[in-house]
Image 1: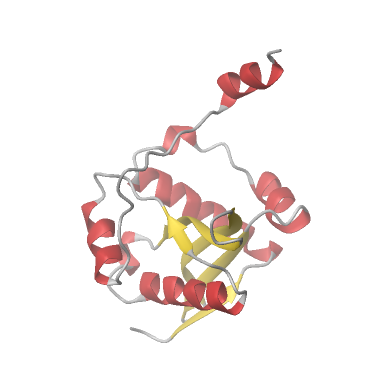
Image 2: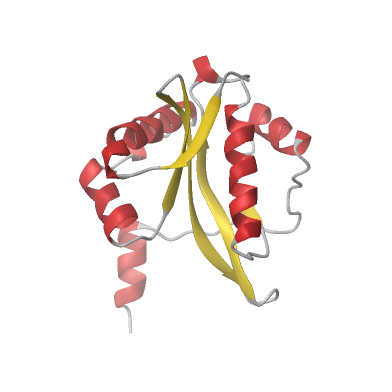
Length: 160
């Protein structure tokens, strides 16, 4: 791996963060779903502090990111960390940046006394699945993610 540093992102990193989000969306064939802006990211990450971002840097350039937030396990009785997105652009892959980001996130999880680190991966994303398995991560059997968004979420919340 080239000389790589991992650091917490600041507001000055918003263009890079949004660029990584857009790159990830293209990779996942979901670019039509990105509505994030630098303003929204600033509000939710830096003002409201609802998520945190780690940046991987090599030669003074951002080469990957990990966006995460705390969740809570009632069974463990403590917080965990949920990795929302991990992305390294295709031209930077295979250099250890993704592994370095995940390792730092694992260290943060332990340092904060959290009970677990978890994330989701698209079923068709074999390169990522193989990468996660190589690190010792295991898929959760018997669980399906459910989601409400947009009009469905608003309508359900407004119903009596």
